[in-house]
Length: 277
Image 1 (cartoon, rainbow, N blue to C red):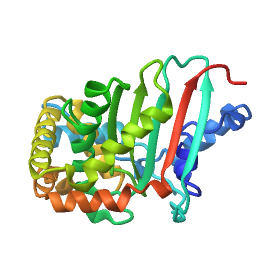
Image 2: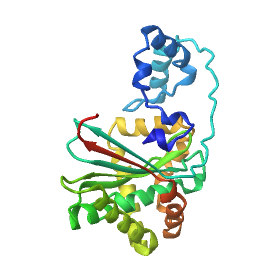
Image 3: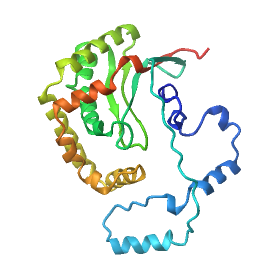
Image 4: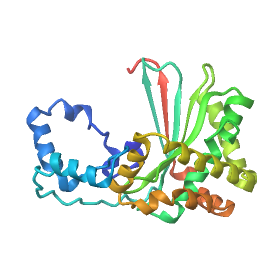
């Protein structure tokens, strides 16, 4: 679905590239890519653990200091054209046991698009699909046994436009048409008065608690900080994330929902069990 969601931006390309291209790659290509991009002046070093700044600096200078900096090609950003039509992609695989379904939309990130909606969209994703009481899980998994799982996803911590979307795994015997009818009803109800201030408050509380728990490890904070710095955020942004999430209102969440969730530009992906040809 990413290849249909992004028409021009490199985000449409799989991380390891297309299979047809990979067959032609050589060890020399890998080494050339490494020499081109893997430079200390193009990296972020994050150290987590019981260590002082002085000790960490000494170790960094010892092991990384001898590596010379070198010129890195400039990052050339491209603009993604506005979407003007909905797209549907259907595929089959013999390795799939249940139908997997997704629906995605282009969305702002912290850096790109209407970035002021990034925090509200995070709350929206949590409200719609972040708990067992969320409209999607309760409506599609608990109340009506149409799906084995259902939820929403959104990550604004990218360099350019982000993706907001929904994902579900259908129960055996359930048709895509029946599932999408129920999904549409639940989503329309939620977006037209079905989300309450209490729902938003509970979602924000869960998210802020999760942020606290994420600090209860060595790798968690290091990963969060590293990803933020690599995508143009600051330590201040990381530190004040709980406060900014906590400041979101029901009106802001509703405005973000109507900005992004538009069926006329949605990309729907269906992966079915079955032979590929």
